[in-house]
Length: 294
Ligand code: 6PG
Image 1 (cartoon, helix red, strand yellow):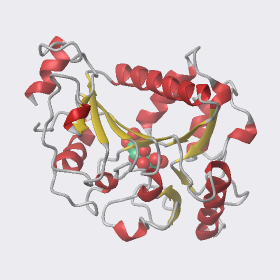
Image 2 (cartoon, rainbow, N blue to C red; image 1 turned 90 degrees about the vertical axis):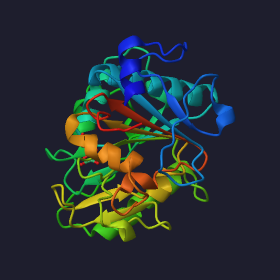
Image 3 (tube, protein in one colour; image 1 turned 135 degrees about the vertical axis):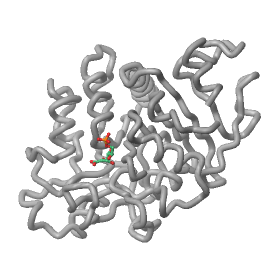
C-alpha cells in the first residue's frame, strides 16, 4: 500500500513514469521501463500477457484518463483501416465513464461499433436496461449509426423470451460482426461488483462460464434483475484489451480478493480474466484500492 499512496501524493517515486494513475505493470520483466516496480500478485492465469493496475485519487480523473485511452484505442483501429469493436457494461462507474466520453470532441465516432458485455433481459427502453443507460449517456446525441449498435437483448418481449435462444442469437451477432472462425472484440469494458462479479458472471457459478461459448444465459442473478445474458470469460479473453473499472470502498474487499487472494476463480470470477493476446487494465480509485497489500 505504501507505494500506492506515494504515487498518489508525490507523483514521484524517483521515476518519471510514476504520476497519478500511472501503470504498474505485470508481465515479462523485459516489458517494463527501467525502474518500474514489479510486484508479486499471486493471481491470474499463467498465460496472461500483461496486467496493469492504474490507481487514481478520484473517480473523475479515472474516467477522464480511461476516456482518453478509449479514444486512443479507437483512433489506432481507425488508422489501421478498421472499426473499434467495443463491448460496454452496466453499472454506476461505467455510467460516469460514458458521460465523460460523450462530452469529448475527439471521439472518432464513425470508427465505433458497440456491443454489450452483459445485459438484463428487459426491453431496450426499460429502466434496468444497460442499453438504455448507454443511450442516455454515451449516445445521448446519437453519434453512432444504428447498424453499428448491437444490443445484447433485442427481443420485443424479453420477459417471455427463451434466454438460451437469446444467448445463441447474440453469439451469431458476434460471429457475423467480428469473425465466424475466430470471433474477438477490440476492447471489453467491465465493472466489478462488491461480491466480486464481473459482467454477469457471479461467484459460485463457475460452471456457467463455459469455455466453449461466447455468450451464456443467467436465470437467477443475485443482483436484480435475475434474468440476464453475459459474455463468457473465454470470449472476453480473446479481446485485445480489457478494462476493468472499479470505484468506491464497497469494492475494496473484492479488489483485494481478486488481485491478491488465493487462486479461486469460482469465488473471484475476475481471476479468470487473462487476455491471451492482449492487456488487462484495472482502473481503480484510491478507495477501491485501499485494501491492497502490495
Ligand atoms: C450489471 C453489470 C455489472 C456491473 C457491476 C458494477 O449489473 O449490469 O454489468 O457487472 O458492472 O455490478 O456495477 P456498479 O458500478 O453499479 O457497482
